[in-house]
Image 1 (cartoon, rainbow, N blue to C red):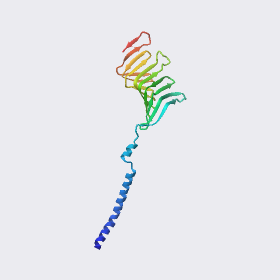
Image 2 (image 1 turned 120 degrees about the vertical axis):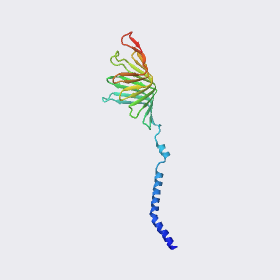
Image 3 (image 1 turned 180 degrees about the vertical axis):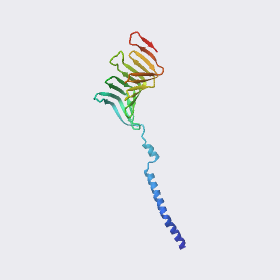
Image 4 (image 1 turned 60 degrees about the horizontal axis):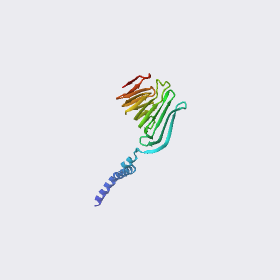
Length: 208
């Protein structure tokens, strides 16, 4: 019997380091599990598309290098969303001032602006007005009406893939889409273009 006990004791002594290592490893795993966020907690930490702040009756102005107003953007209410850093605006209105171009004004029922302020999407009764140029006969007042416009602020481009009505002076055109470049003064009407073009001379008109 003493010899048997001696063997058991020796076996335990040999296995003791392994047992201690197993206990340490198990404790470490347990501590990691306790201190690591569970899946439900991790999901709760994911940012949701909910407002984190808002502004009422705001007005934002971007100045040109000479200190004059370049862009003024206003709205009844602006709400910021934390997940994608976008802004939703109630009754947005934007006016673009350029010294060598006619002013352009855009407004709608609702707007969504990206985090950088470089893209503004206008929804519902969206209306664009570009005032007449210096020579009204060659560069008359122009308007565009649609349920959706996208403003590329840095490029000074307005576009839409929705039905649009364009007026240029007395001329009226309708199309399924539009791209307007205020820098080059170019207007592209896209798809199913129709309307009436009034020429400069009285009595000259053509229908399409």
